[in-house]
Image (cartoon, rainbow, N blue to C red):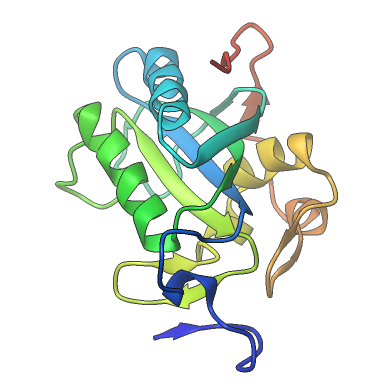
Length: 188
């Protein structure tokens, strides 16, 4: 069931017609197989080529220990993108999944190593609790590998209904999250 914070406010994703309001979204990127940086860069390029998506900023790249992954899984490279978009939540999610698929993402086992992960974390103040879409992302508040790069881009950011990104990050163990200043994502 999809909900909005105020029942008297129209959910912009249900508007008819071709125009949706411009909203800020946060996307989390991750890769722990193959040429990890090339996969992250490929995601940035593919998302930048998406109509109605404007990449505003890319965070520094972090190397992180896998969380909830099978034993022996390799470390991830992670980054966060801030984008402005007029796409609906479902259309943006579909685009994120299409980008993953373009880079041979396999969905065989939950938390298994992967070539590319593109997660929709927030889309404005949109809230959703559908079978295929949950906003804000339900585990983002507990993931230092999402919160740290996001805080680098926007230290005042908030997760709707959860609180300040900086405050949430302060409650987590971020020892396994290492900034890689030798790696950088280029915005097209």
